[in-house]
Length: 368
Image (cartoon, rainbow, N blue to C red; front, side, top):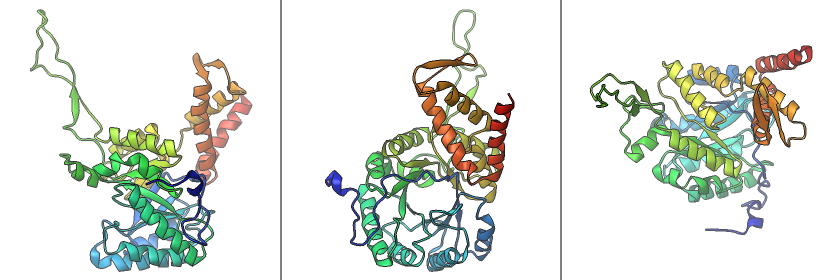
């Protein structure tokens, strides 16, 4: 299905806000999930505002059927009663993951949340997206609800890749609506849909490996039974890389999903860093200890920012090439460094500790 390009940025309902022509680059290193029906979790939300980039009220998986209504109503109460949570100027964004589009709860999720807290709700995360048709459905419904509620800005949409069909259609999903904010990897459901032989939620697998070639004896015969090193591989590398390319093509943002082994903070940090290096801008957090890991990994290091700033300064108008510390830097290097510098500036605006660290770079450069 196609429509004229000139119609793409027209509201899908009379009175709905104008669609965005560019998705804001708001820091979202950690998307921290919480259960709005859990009183203990809900009580912690006010103290987390300002310490995590995104707080997401989860309505889908991990919320029992008997708690669906309580979770939905709890999210409304939390959003209405928590200062600094949600909205274009808030330090901590408010997201929600609605129930799947084939569930009996999703319609009530949207018709309840948009009128009640639409002015604070930044992003709606849609699970198990199969293709552009799923985004079209949510897009039209949100426009109608926004018009009815009198909202002056559109609520954005984030899709989770949890099915083989969704991965196959990833480019059309990214381009399905001006509301598209980004994509997340959903490894558990995706593994099941693909019939992958793993029960892990994210991360590598010891059985998915490459093995060092066998040594040879003096006659050149391979010693197959000799001790050989093995190297564990990443089951999700292909999917993440494809997701990053699709998001970059459409000007939206890719995210790593959950890392299920809460206790293994070392492997969690490694997996987050792999995603960061490939182009992801953030990840999910299932426990407060993962927020700290995400904030560390998805923030450029002081060393990287210092180098990036030196390249930007040395390149002048951005043409030609220069030698810096024995390495050639050219216009391609400059583009990479500008991404790093821009991200550092965005994070410094919301993270006082990072601002202090990045400001010290400038001070040291002046002293030098």
